[in-house]
Length: 588
Image 1 (cartoon, rainbow, N blue to C red):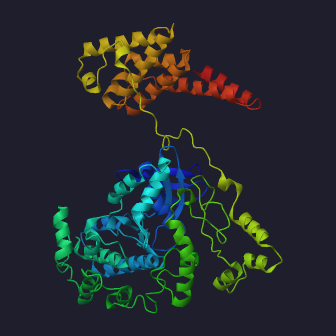
Image 2 (cartoon, one colour):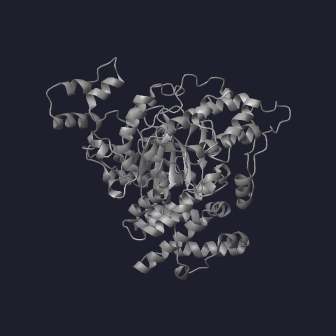
């Protein structure tokens, strides 16, 4: 994480905070998600499905990290917000804009389906906008590989985190509620209990197109049971824009929605009908809509090509694309449904022989990108790049053994720093500070709450401060006295977090006494707690008066820091630090 600089918070959920970040030494801005570890199954699922995908309409995954309290996900930054925000602001979108946005959605979803991935929870909040207005699929927490059981995968990851197999059945049951997305966009057959499918994703896409035009989804209710009844048994009303001045929906658009929102999945529109529909005005002309659809897992060849081809040009060679996607997808698909938790980590392998991890929960100087190497490397690489001979082809054509070839590849792919876990210490944005607690039994004064302190009259407040000052100013002749003073300082830390209390403490004699103890207290623990109280008071106060000892406070803290630097510095740098220390003391 030391390779990134965190900027302002740009989003927040129940268990996740999203920051704008930047990679040090570059102008490459990213989105950094800080998530509680209870979301490990969802985040692991997101990473395993997207770490190789490079596509115009899918948010790019860069790196992920694990610290003592959180998981950190570094992904592509989308500055336009979510589609949900756009719909809420505009209330409804013109049909031309719906068409433009729909082309982006279809392009991204078709790419996922040809890789064998079902999104499963298509909703406006999971569609992000890049600056120029390109829509991108994000948040793959509930996505899955076609045909797998996501509950089992979540339970597998949770069991691995728990460190054993105990209670695996209980884990699977508890995961059932976590793999269901928004019911508003769920297909009728999924509501009845059928598994997600390509057809159910197309239903959700139809709901999204409907909502963009009408400003509301085709089926909506505050009651889950009522919403379920509508999805199962009612037909959606024709979409009508909220703004009556806008034109009504065209016959092509209504026909498209009718095809996508068929309750019977057998009658629902397929990819062939969707891409060839007249509403898109031949935006997908020349595309083979069924190329690669339904592959059982990710294809490295197809993933590699996705970053090179125009995202709106779908594969035109279905035979070769289908064969390669199916063959490599089978090998990779196995890693998505592992029964042994220790095996889970996507590998960058040459026929499964290399054992290094594809990515680590550690800091790396650059994000790892997917490798296009397959079994039988020389033929495949040459086929995908006919105009340029790759270094790997040159090596393979020489007289090298299989072992030498793998060694050469490892040298190109990995560096020593990739396999090192960098410790991250005392970063307040990463490390969760333990809460400050005090024992009212040994406080030796009334443990007033913040509300009680605010209600104290001036005389009572002065009496309270006098008791605090007398306890802090007493000498520590025993361990019991030191513990009592630390307990009192912990109490002050608790109440100093309130603005009015902090302001009153700042303008009281107690603050001067704290500054003195920051210099003279013989106990390092007491000095640290005193510094914490001063910092909390300074952070939460709302008023500075002319006689507030700002300079005295900062100089005291600076001298303490310089003292520590002198003690810890090397002999070469120590004279310079001593000179600074003497100069600071003289100026003071």
